[in-house]
Image (cartoon, rainbow, N blue to C red; front, top):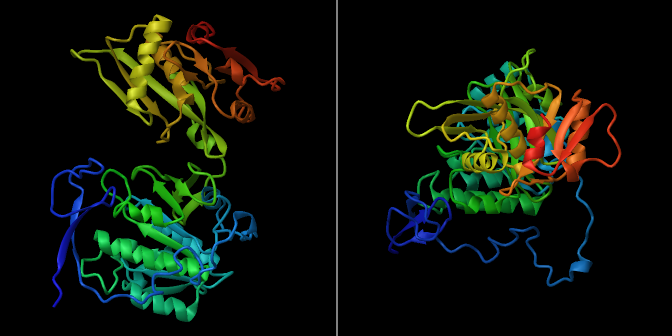
Length: 455
C-alpha cells in the first residue's frame, strides 16, 4: 500500500510546506497553513487533464496574426447591472466566481438570473448546501418562473460531470464550490486540495464544451475569498457581492475580469421580490437633508466606466484625550492622516488637537485619490462650523507639496454633476473643460490655498 503524504498549504498564496508553522515563509501571512493529505491516487489518463484552456486536441504552434479573432457573442443575464460588471454579458466557456458574506444575496441573485436564462437556453442549478425544497420555496417567495429551470442536488464532481455530459446545459450554477469534492482526493470538502481540484475539473469542462459556469464562493472573516489563491487564477471573472446586514442596498464589484474592465460597480436593492436593479445609483447616495449642514460635501468618484456622486461627511471636535482620534469609514485612514498634515502645512489649518471622523455615506468604499480635496473641504467646514453650498461638487488629488493634481475623466465627472442639478464645482485647473458647461460655474485651482480661498 502506498504511503500517504501530509502537506500544509497556505490559503493566501497556495505554497506548500512540509510541516505546520505559524507564518507562511513565502507570503508572510499568519495562521493560513491548512493540512491536507496527498493520497496515492490512481494515475489519470494521459489526456484527462488536457484542454484546460479550450480544445482538448493540440492545434500546434500558431502565429498570433493567424489566430481567429471571431468575437464570441455574449449572453445577457437579464440584469443590466449584472451585465455591466461582467463587461457586457456572460461569455460562453467562461468560469465566473461570485463571493460575498453570508446573507449578502449570492444565491438570490443567481436564482433570479437562472430563472430568466432558463426561458432562452438549457440551464442547470446545482445546489450542495440547500435541499431542492428550500430552493423551490425561495423561488416561490420571490415570484420567479420555475417551469423551465432544471435543478440538481449533488456534491460529487465526478457524478456531476457525467450528468453535464449527458444533458449538455448551456449555463450551470454551482452553489457552492466549497461543498464539492473529487473522489480521488482524500481530504474533506472545503479543504485546499478539494477546492482546487473541483474548480479545475469544472473549469476544464466549461472551456471544452463552451458552457457558462457560475461558481459561488465563501469568504473569510476579513472579506476575502476562502480557499487557495490559485482558485482566483483559474477562473475568468471574480465578483464580490457586498452589503451590510442593516442596509437594503447591495453592491456588485468586479475584481478580476478577462472580458471587460475591473472595478465595475453594480448597485441592487434588496426587496421582497429579490434583488432589484438601481438604474441611477447617484440618487441613492445623494439623499441629503433639506438643510445645509457643516462638514458635508458631494464628490464625484469614478467606478469602472461611469461616474458616481457620493456624499462625504466630516466631524471635527475637540479631543478630550491625550491622543486625538482619527477614524475613516469608506476611505484609507493613512491617506486621511497624510492629507490632514498637508492641510496644516499648506493651508494653515491646525487640527492636531482635534478628533477627526470621516464617513462616506451609503457604505461606498472609495479607493481613488480624487476624494482628497473633498475630504479636506469637508473637514474644514466642520472645523469652522460653516456649511458648504449644497449645489457644490468637489474632486481633485492633493499632493504633499500642496498642489492640486488632475484626475482621470474630469469632464465626464463634471457633466454627470450637472445632470443632477449641481451648479458649482471646485476642480483641478487641468480638469476644467475647454467648452463651458451650461448652468455650471467651474473654479479651477492649482494649489490647496486657492481651493480654501474660493469658499
